[in-house]
Amino acid sequence: MPIVCGLLGGILGVVGMLFMPDFPANDFLTAAAVGIVSGLAATGANQIGKQLAGGKEK
Image (cartoon, rainbow, N blue to C red):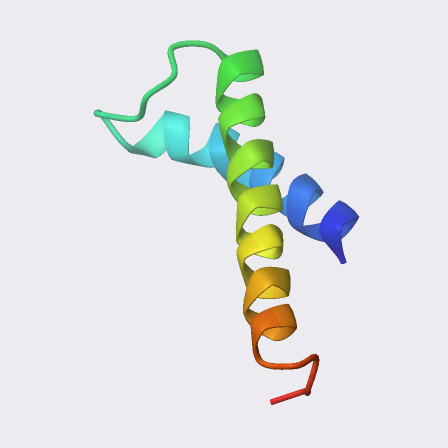
């Protein structure tokens, strides 16, 4: 799951750079890196929530 979120984040980071005027990146590599980090951070936040809830699926 983290790999999928990272890949989708990288793709969406580049798409975001193309369509959002205030995106925090000016080139494709930085935009992909911002997207990958965001995707992996979302996965980490999800896992922290699961761990705090006792590992139960919702």
